[in-house]
Each structure stands twice: as C-alpha cells, then as structure tokens.
Image 1: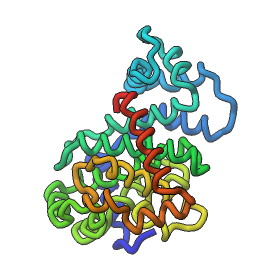
Image 2: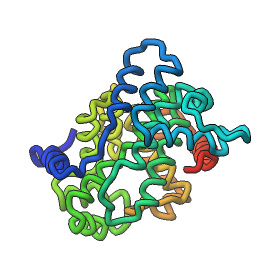
Image 3: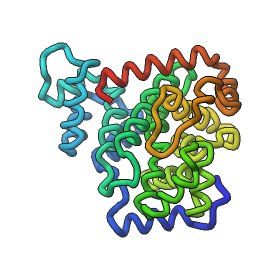
Length: 290
C-alpha cells in the first residue's frame, strides 16, 4: 500500500487511542453497517431502532429532513417520519456524515470549518459521480467523506509537526503527501485507510481512500474507487474551496492537470460532463445545508 516506515501509521493510531483522541465509531453505526451488509430486507422500524441508540445521530437526521431539500413546509420531529422522508437508502450515508462532523475532540491547527465543508462536499460529489460511473453510491459517499480523515489524525498527533507540513507544502495539495512523509514518516491517505481498517469498513472504501492521490497504483479491483475518490476531491478544489490546508493552483482550475484528465479518461468522462455533475452535486449539498 505504501513505502512508509514499519508500523508508523499503526503506532500513531495506537497512541491516539490510548489518549482517547481517536475518532469514535458509534455502536449504532456498526450495527447499521452490519444490517446493510447482511442483504436482509430492512424495514423503517429496524432503522429507527438502530439510529435511536445514538441521540446525536437521531437529532442530526431530524435536522436533515428539515433542510430545503427535504422539507414540505411542515417541520418534522419524529425519527420514523424523518427516515421515511430521507429514504432508507440515504439514511446510512447521512448518519455517517453526521457522525463525521462531531467525531473529533481536539481542535486542529487549521480551519476546521474549511476542512469539514471540503469533506462533506467531496462526499456529495462522489455520490453524484457514482451514478454516472457505475460505482456503489453509498461506498462512493464514504470514500469522499473519509479520504482525508488521516489529516486530522496526524494534526492531533503533533500540532507543531503538522504546522511544519503545511508550511513545507506551501498550500499546494500536490506536495502534501510528500511533506507529510518527510515530517511524520507516513501520509494522510494511509492514515485514513488504517483507521477505516480498524473500523472494519469494506475493502473498496479502504483501498479507494488509501490510493486517492495515486489511483493508477491501486490494484485493478479497486482502481475505480481510487479514481472516483481522487475526482471527488479535485472537484471541490475546482469549485473554489480549499480544505484549510492546501489547494490546487488557479492555473489548474483553468487548465485541468494531467492527473485529472487521466482520471476522467479512466471512466471515459468528458471534462464538461464532469463539471456539470459536480455543479449539480454542489447545489444539492447547499440545499441540505452543507
């Protein structure tokens, strides 16, 4: 997966876990993931019982249904009604998004607001792209959402070191992984993948996240997820949003990079179609209050 020094990523995750700084994956979401993976038919009441175990998730879902995308003008306060309104298929991704936004106890040495918005927009865009690229929408959403969670892990591990990374990368996302490797001996994509392994996420998501900066190096079985995750991240940058740490150049917004064109070519997707898809996904996300 990487040429990192032995067990650097695992060591960081173990230390954060010991300090209680590792993001928590709620039991309710674990059970929801198992229920989805079992392929057994799920009824609304089954989902209600799972989500109700975590008041944060329940309150968050009720909040989602009262946003512009879902509201009919009549406020909803009942969890069953909220799940019916959102739809069983979307509850899983919404629950993950809500959990992500409240997972971190320690503040990072960069703009948390920019970082979270970038993650959420990337998730919505990944889901929208998945429809056209014949990739599982739920897994695509999670690839987009979770791809940079390793940035947070490195920054919480050592704030001063991560500030050094930011300075060294000089706000250029193409340099970020190399700078992380130089300072930490590992990089954020691998850190993200290690955490997702611990959380027992599907391998498609783990590998898509692990290789989202080098999708051409992913195993053939996981290339689609790696390229899709790369495209979802690049899309947010193309829309003009940095992630609080780095960005693409203005020139790359005007003239797509070779890496972006190669990713689009992998799917046979024209740049014009890509830009239309990401604009629509952005508008949907805005309607949901992202």
